[in-house]
Image 1 (tube, rainbow, N blue to C red):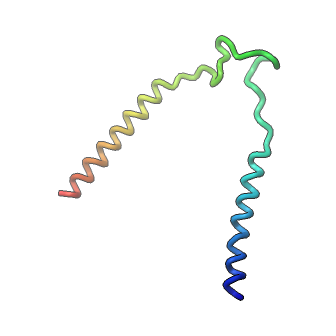
Image 2 (cartoon, one colour; image 1 turned 180 degrees about the vertical axis):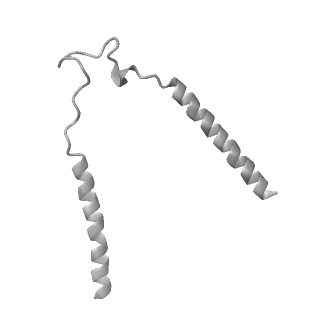
Image 3 (tube, one colour; image 1 turned 135 degrees about the vertical axis):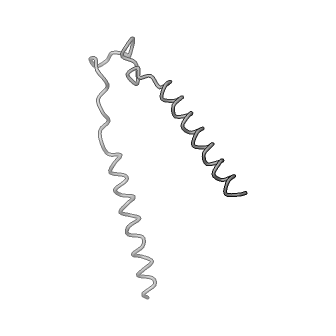
Length: 80
């Protein structure tokens, strides 16, 4: 009897989390960026605001490569 109550009580937090997660999707979407309604995104008003990602992407790749080299070096040092 005691074990069945414990099993049922374990379900309650899961149900609460699922219900709260569904509430986060109930929000209205944000308004479209700039301009008047009914216009298309042309010129400098592109999707994403025209933010460059190239420099940050290469920096992220370089840091990832450096971290991978560091981990490989420390792993091979521990192994020997």
